Length: 178
Image (tube, rainbow, N blue to C red):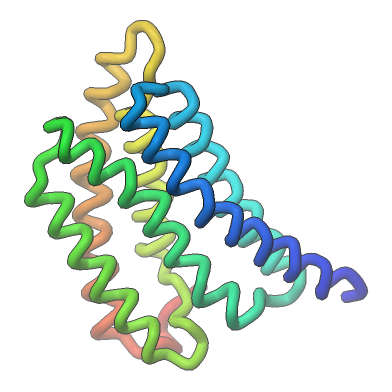
């Protein structure tokens, strides 16, 4: 594919941009700029989908991108989760459980030659977490019903996080579909 190198470079660039979004996102939350935080999170989630699409279009992403992508997802998701926990919107024990899962899987991935491709459960967990966070952080009028829905979506995302972690550490990599 003639554009595979360019697609890989674009995918890696989007991954780096997503990592950089984490700091302005948390600053926007701390400063009470809910709309900016919401848009940054949405932009980060869309960039995650776009870099995956570009990597698949190239016939596979770079090894570097495969290792960095899940870490940038964690930055983008854990920053607002920690803020929501500090604000009392989510229980800290659940966030710490999720943080422990992410550290465990990051350590597991570090030992994998390929960076440890994402399982379907891991991908579903990430999508559900982004959806829950977008609803929890909705800053506009009439936000309470959306935020409540986000609160209730957080729990299945936590269950998926724990079950996919179990799958990562118990299933051989060849059994996972990425």
